[in-house]
Length: 165
Image 1 (spheres, rainbow, N blue to C red):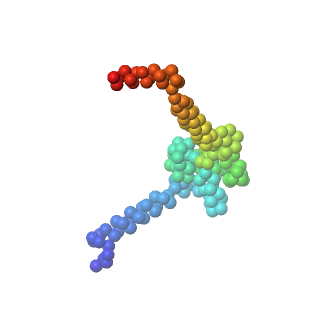
Image 2 (image 1 turned 90 degrees about the vertical axis):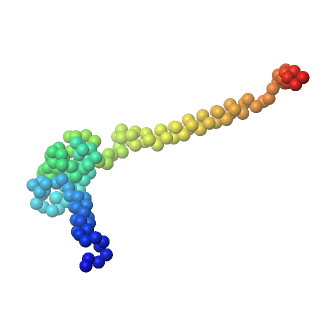
């Protein structure tokens, strides 16, 4: 008897599915031959790699990507660490070589501030233009409410009397 597991034989498939889901989330593309022997240096390499974009996949870090360029970047990170570079120096070296696009979280300095500010700036501009448009329309609608001039009213009265009679 299996208890409250339902049909016989389903429990192992659920457990197996859960195990595969957990392993898939933990599995990274880093190969054993890339790893450093020193756990502290390997942890630094993983920390740096988590912030670098795969230039092929563009939506994954180099630690998650199986692309050959990502592998080359992972090896380069480890070589720079072994050469004695700090984390900042390793990132600066790779950014100098591949450009700021390689960073998963781009900086807000330099000309990037323009990209960061353009969204809110354009929203505020659209808000101001929309408010000006609505105000101008309401003023234009209110401007035609002065009524008729005495001559126009007289002519209207004449026309209306002609239709009635």
